[in-house]
Length: 324
Figure (cartoon, rainbow, N blue to C red):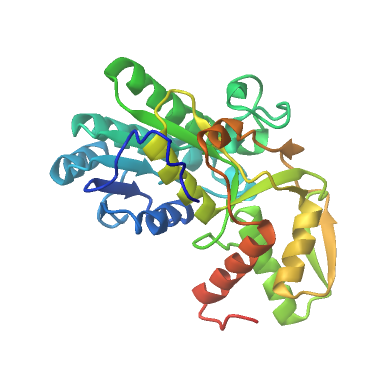
C-alpha cells in the first residue's frame, strides 16, 4: 500500500541490519519479500546454523551479528490435529524461542523488535469482532491452548521488556494465514493448506468426495501472507506501543464456504463430506483491525486471488506445472 505522507516515521529501515527469525516459514518469507524493496541489509540464520531455542547460541549469534531490528516470526505452527498431537512441543518450543530471542535482543541492544502472535490467543467465546482488549478476558479454545499460551507469553514478554528496560518491543496478532511457503500436510497443516492438498489429490485420483473435518459451520477470517508481510513492515515504521495490534483481512466465511472455494480453485468437481466427529475449534473468530486501520494500513489481496496464488505455490513445491 502507499503510506500516508503525513504519517510519522518512528523507525527508519534505511541502512539497518534486519534479522528475520523464521525467514523460511510462511510468515517470515513474506516479511523477507516485503523487505526486499527496502534499503536495508537482511540477516538470516537457518535451523542448521542456529537453534533459536538455545539461549547461549542465540545470544552469541546476536552479539556477533549486531542486528538493528528483529522480526520474530519463528515458531512451531500447525492446525488442530498438530496442536492436539504435540502439545508439549507447541508450548515448550514457542516459549523457548520467544525468551531466547528477546533476551539476546536485550543483550545485543537491538533497536526494535516485532513479535508475531496469533489470533488463537483470544478467548474461545470472545465478542466479535475481537479487539485487542479481549486478551486474557476468558477461557481459551481447548484444541490449541498450548500454542495460545506460548503466544500469550511471548506478547507479555515483549510488554515486560518494554516496561522494565524501555525496549522498543512491539507485537502484532495476525488472523489465520495462508499463502506461499505454507505447510501442505494433509493432517498437520493449517486449514487452507491442508484442504488444498486434499482437493488436489482427490482431483488427481478421481475420488468421489473429499472429507473436511468438523461440521463446516465455524466462521473464519483469512489473511494472505503477503498482506501480513506488508503490515509488519508498516507497523515497524509507524507504531511504538505496548498494545499488540490485530492484523486481519475483514473477509469472513464459513469452513464449508472455504472448502467449496478451494474445490473450485483446484478444479475438483466431486462432493464435500463433513466429518462431524472431528473438532470444529472456536465457533467464530474475526479480529477487529480498527487500530491498525486508523494508522493507515489496509489489506490488498482478496481471498479468491490469494487462494490461486497458494495453489500455484503448492504445485510449484511439488515440481508440477502451474494450471491455467
